[in-house]
Image (cartoon, rainbow, N blue to C red; front, side):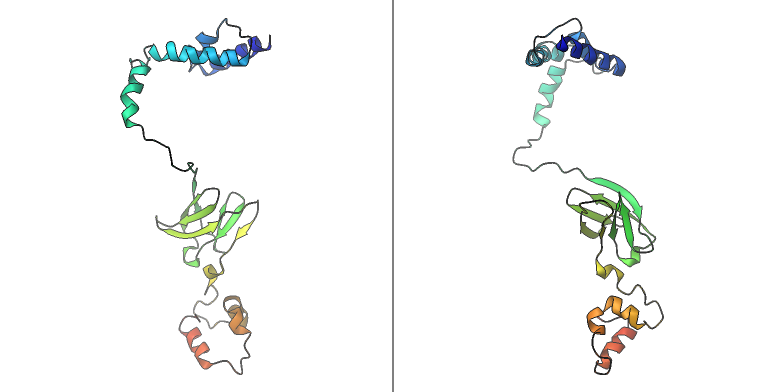
Length: 197
C-alpha cells in the first residue's frame, strides 16, 4: 500500500512539472511489492522502451544519439573530484576588507574602493582584480570571522604627513621597540623616503 502511495505522489510531482510525461506513463496504474522491484522495473523500461522512443525535440532516438556521442566523452578515471567554485563581485571597503557571505578578508590597500572578483572553494578565498590574482586567503571555517594579512595595511596611515609614533608602531612594531636614543638615523631617512623595509 505504501508503494502505491509513493507511486501516486511521484506521478503527481510529474504532473506539476509536466516535463517528464514518459515517466508518468511508466508509473501510471502500476503497483510494486518493494522499492527494489520498482527500481528494477524502471531500469528495464528505460533500457528497452524509453531510449528507443523518438525524442520530441530532436526527432531522433536517444539510443542512437548516445552511440554517436560516445567518442566525444572524456574519461574521468584518475582525475580528482570536481571542485565547485563560487564567484562574486565585491568592493574592497575603505578598511581594506572584502566581505563574502558573513566573513571578511583583507586586500591590499591600493584596491580600497575598487571592485574585485572573489572566487572560493572549500579551502581558499581568491581575490582577483581585472583578472590577475591579487591575494589568496585560507577560507574561514565559521561565521563572522576575519582573515587579515598585516602587509595589506603597510603605509595606510602615512599619506604625505610624517607618521606619528602610533602609526609607526602599527607597521613597524619591532623597530619601535628600540630606544629612540640609540636608533640609527638611517631608519628615519627610510621613513621619509616611503617607509622602512
